[in-house]
Length: 401
Image 1 (tube, rainbow, N blue to C red):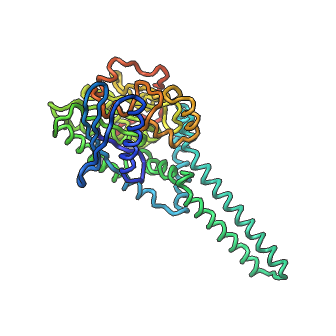
Image 2: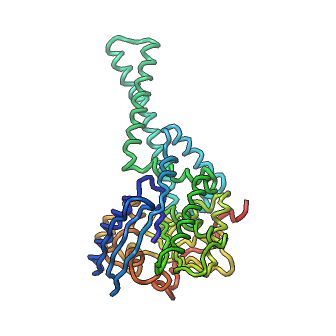
Image 3: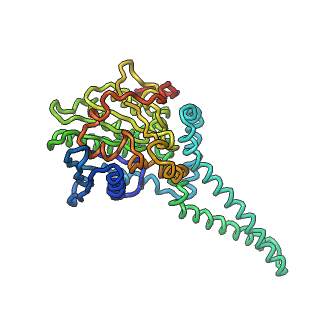
């Protein structure tokens, strides 16, 4: 299995720990065995999995394709630079009509996109109020002390500004709980290039394609499964489309499969310069040499739940084959108690696809990634979700610059 994470600055070790803890929890719930073994240092980060699932003993290798260094670089912004990002990103999504069209699909992810805007503007407003409040307090103290004059007026203003800057810095330090700066950087990353792949990301996608090709040509795997989560979904799509476009796939190779989880493809594909991504969606949707399953859930307010990323982007060909759009159905696969505990933890719910379900259905991340069946066999004959959205909604559908 080859895993491509979303926009995440944290090193890949967190994904191994998440797989280890949540895999153990799912194994206890579902009655199978699952164990991890660390990989020797050097090379691609990953781990080995030994499992007894569905009456079979399975060994799986997990590789994590990292782009956290690109994310970290894009997040290295000062407070004023982040507010400049906010203005530029909001302008791009509004002026291009992308925001209005995205709201026709799902309001949840659009609200999630507006959250950092509202939060950062709220922090700024509170800081401006702090300037006034601190200045008034200093003026009052000076008045009581019998002081006055222009110089002391400027002193009061300076005290207010210092207090406001301190408050803004405090908010930034607390962003590990508020996620305002983090999400702002995320949305600004794609908006800055109006949907086109940034040069460093484009180069990394080519590296990912090379890694996938190597997995297909080396070893004796029963399947090469590529998993893309959140923003990693459209990176996985582009990496695989590159292999098909360049006709680099070997004639004799293990089955190739793509599992996209909690995808946010329309946030990028609806932007005017996302020609390459739209072309990749169009190309991959017709290929016979791959199985592509897209899993989302209406309970995930950060994903475009049950939106066929090819169709809603307006690039679905007549002979569209993929993806198979399925629902993880959080309200059914999580117990009422567990759902109540998670339903307002939006960021945590966005990672639920990688976690244990206490009432699992036919979507089980660990059965899929460490079980004996290929993705094609597991979902053979499965009909897409009846609630999937396929109406072409994007205002930009060009696939060439």
